[in-house]
Length: 90
Image (tube, rainbow, N blue to C red; front, side, top):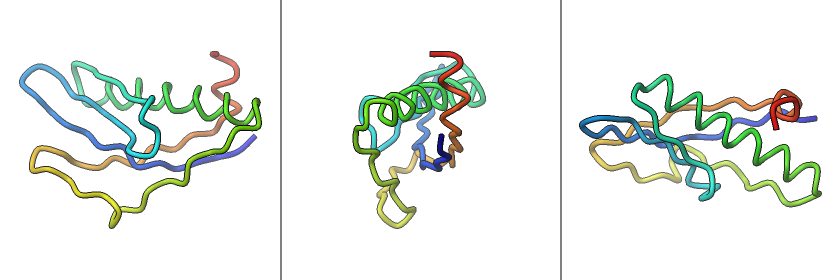
C-alpha cells in the first residue's frame, strides 16, 4: 500500500546488536550480526505498519535525525518499508 522510512537506533553490546525504533516502541530486534538485527527489525516494523494500515490505525510520524539524542554506543540506520511485501509474510 505505502512506503515508509523510519530511523532505527542500533546499539552494540559484547555479543549482539539491538535495533529499536523510537517512534514505535513495540518494534525492535536483536541479532548476532548488524545485518541480522537490521533485517529482523525491518520485518518487525513492516508487519506492524501493514497491520496499522489494514486496521486503519494511525501511523506514527517518523523521527528526524535532529529529534534523537544518541548515546556513545548508538548509531542510526535508515529502514525502508514497503508494506505490501509484509502482508505476504504475516
